[in-house]
Length: 411
Image (cartoon, rainbow, N blue to C red; front, side, top):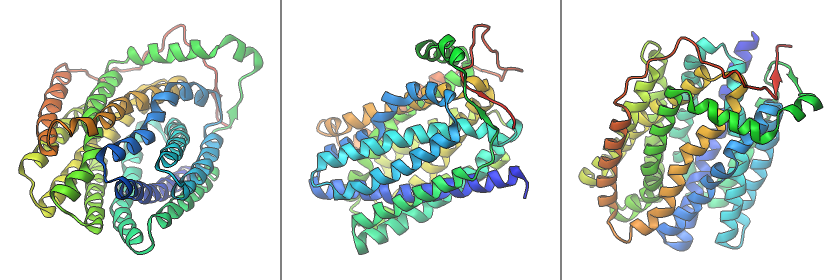
């Protein structure tokens, strides 16, 4: 097996296992909080707790990720994340569950950003879309199996068992990361650290990102879409259980439906090499918003809801893979961690805001009205952001004033 093949299979297995565990964690946390409080606001607060860390550590973590050994950092984070996840079901108070969900997410965001920044070092840049699509296909396949199994585990053994499974997957993920073959990392010297100050590096990363029109357009579209998606994530469980009246096991099948859509969309991206990736970001998020609107207006049964969420998964993964690949292929390597950090932060800012408002908005409008009108408005805004044609540049410009604080060279 070549180094390239080894890295591919380790990455595919590690991220797929981690995704399987995350489905257990997400489903168990949502159902456990809702069972304890019977409140959409409480579910929203739990989801805010899991997404808020990205707003706090995203750009700052990006600077340190560019300075540190990305693989070792990810390994440590995966182990710490598993331990914090394992503690959640043993917390005696819902507020402590929020706290540990926050800590787990903060550590996980650092790990995910480090792994995303590491990816261009594992595979040839011109083949990144193909590798991203294959890995995402496997990851999202776990999103099909995971919710079904999680629903069974929760119904048979309770919420704690689901968190134990998630802990085990993080340990396995750390092992696969440790076995990757990556270029040798060279720590910057003390002189280099003095010349390249933290806040200057942060500012340079932001300036560089803003000067990349295609990257910025993809980020702004994802932010706009997430402003609706965050609210959808909170109200989805309310819509499903209170309006459609699904059981916990059926809710697992709905989550699996999203997973089927994600896996199918990731598989189809293997055949998209000749199509501008920015088009996938734009159309994927427009159709996503329209599907949420259709969910509120047309859906009155479990089966119809299942079909809609499958389509939602397909369009979501189109945009997510395309946006990540645009950044990985059109960003200079020395800025990769910072741009990924900013992207994750901006991406999640809309999610956090809408999650926080979900419970409040629900007191004014019905869930169906939120889905209908929110979807239409979001689709319109993304269409406006998509009007300008932005062809890919021959080369990604690098500012003359750029500085590198973390050097990664071939061993």
